[in-house]
Length: 231
Image (cartoon, rainbow, N blue to C red; front, side, top):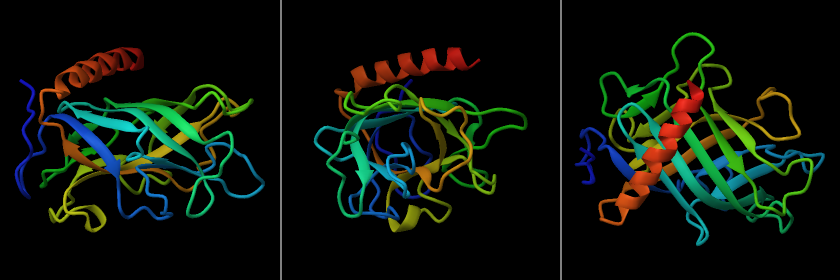
């Protein structure tokens, strides 16, 4: 049975269910605040292009569904090319559709109540997609593939919780999600080389109201389809 009750204070096991996602207050290149960062998502200029996604924008609605053995992050987010304090008013600014399924390596952190993703040995990865607004020009228009994995293997692919001391990630006293990503847009043939930084960094609150039911169904359905495709 799905749990739609808020988790207790520090030390409680993270409840299974649907979470609404928000910007984390401690993103390295804020402002603007963001919940996802994908540097050089598109090679727009001769310099280093930062792309961030504002999970709290009026046009955004990002969710995480945690089911014990899998985590589905999905929804839409307003974002674009971050030029330092603001988004560039160009064709890359708009609403992006985001969908990512962790169905390999999802487990509890040993000795803690957080959830982590640690891939087993071998060529195992979790995948997702990012679909840009129609204004994004060729050759970048179309679905970008996302893949998990820390670029040196020195850190876990993804973690969801309030860290080992229950005080929160980067000083935020609540649940956060953070983890590393590779991306490959339609103009690329490989996920490599990795460009620093590309990662999730968001906060999360459990959705305890009856309005969560429809979104829970959507999360389960989409995750089931994605899981079958990845087998």
